[in-house]
Length: 350
Image (cartoon, rainbow, N blue to C red; front, side):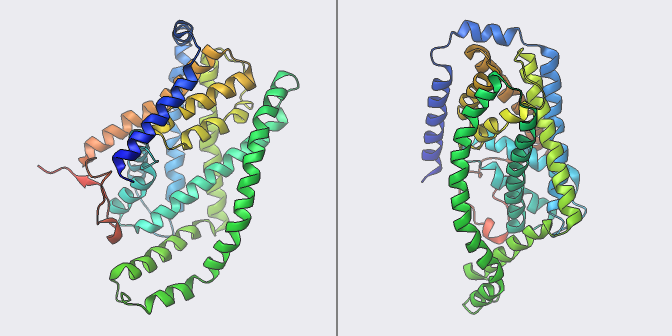
């Protein structure tokens, strides 16, 4: 499917979801909620949202240690901001590919290994959100929130059941592939291209680097540090979310925020540009269901929460792109550099 077709479909889906989010709501009431929000809480939310990228970058450096030690923190931060900004602009979470590819070029890393760490990041993020959600269950009060929580847990339970079935099918396959990786690579090397050229040799090299990328969590010390940074950055995200709720006078304890947090995470994961539309509709539903927020107040808080998460990415991502002289022209086109462990991003000339 061509990139232009993907973009049209993604924008159409975002527009439709936004329509569902705002339908039957009075714009005047929405604007009134936004205009009466506490600006101090929103300012703190923006600061915390920007600050959470620091433990995210440090965690990434630990995951990349099997390939290289002493990676510059500034490189990790700038490429992270650029990647998140690209995911906001283009559909399909394109930034998740651009980010490791760009860092691989800057720090002389194997692209496949850097991509493996992004997979690990997503696994760690999902696991951390689930852990915090489970911990927050102990702080759920009886009364209205308990009923709202049941409405949220039920669909999550059904989704988890299907995910568990998929995991039961995929896990044995992955174990067999991991245990047989040396035989598979050796078999590939018997074909033409064992000298280091050709698609078979490239596949062997990428497969080996990808496996090495997952060795970043073998060490108990490294695993503990990575989990610590994961919990820390998601606590900051939870605090940022709680401040936005407080700004809109939505009653929620800090721990109850982690019962709500899986919804914006799912919203961002939808492959519209920046999760636009899906983020709003899920956050509105969660705020109404869990916290009893009026519809106009819930959608106003949802839009603001989304904007708060965009501000640091827009500022620092744009500044990083400008300072490094990166052109976005080649991002959506096919480049032959990836197969040679080079980036798809072109630099400005002249």
